[in-house]
Length: 279
Image 1 (tube, one colour):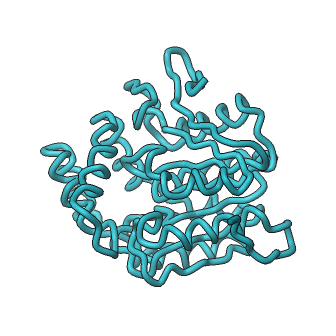
Image 2: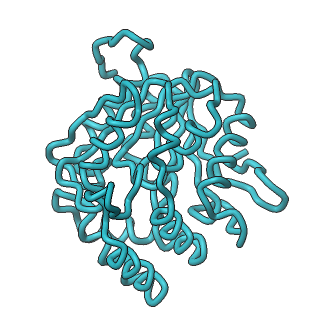
Image 3: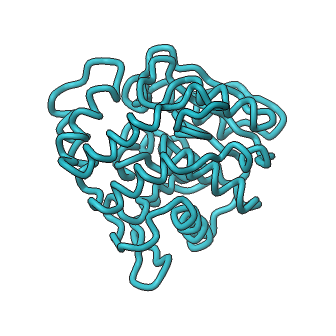
């Protein structure tokens, strides 16, 4: 069944495809599992299981008033992993999903997660501070919140203008905006507030599993400097640079992302193996 119960009257939509060693995909703000369309099918065809989760408040999942926060979203992910009896998981998080994935691994030390992949991850700290000069100034972030409150359709339209580095069709932009508008208004605003509220720098230093950061050099939403901060804090983290990508590397360089994710997933811990793409 596509729905997994995670709390009373709260069910999450879970797209569970394929068999084999699992990859769990966590979408970014304000998206859903549908953002992974360019990667999920290829991963399954390569012989692996893909479990793509719609966070509560987003996509096809239930949209309760409560629980639209990092702690609950992380807890929900753990319940899906348990429900689907997943082990030796590569956990993949994009943007806000990357921050939630870091939070989950750092705070649970879940032995079922063997690798962590961070895609343009929105952390460890998005807001500019004295000791975090690469962050976004608070007044600009507050402007984002107000724009979301006043006209979230317009804000998402403007937001998407900075999302991709390569030109995309008007039709793709419309599709992408429609995914974002499927999010509940309350959850969408709470997601922005959570992104601005959290400083994960202390907790992610406890992450011990193999971690790789995939980040576009031309990212205008979560600057590449965030990947460099992650590297300072997470022992052994490796960065894969996407020279021609903005924030939306899953469209800008979809083939490269597919290959790099599979390469990371297939590597034995402590030993790299050459990449072979299925015909």
